[in-house]
Length: 82
Image (tube, rainbow, N blue to C red; front, top):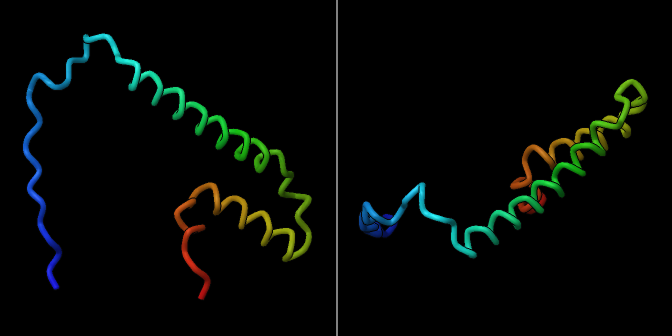
């Protein structure tokens, strides 16, 4: 079955004005985005703090790779196991 095509109208040229003051919704969204970045920053700092020379066993490396992959490819966490 072919996917349904949805027609999206063109945006009004006046809909975006880079010089217009940002509204409360846009400012609230920036707060949420910053909080999400900070959460990822903490995850990244935590993984980067690991001395990779200290990884001695296959289990150590496996755990490290799992953590790094979860940061780089978070969409992979949503897949169900085979």
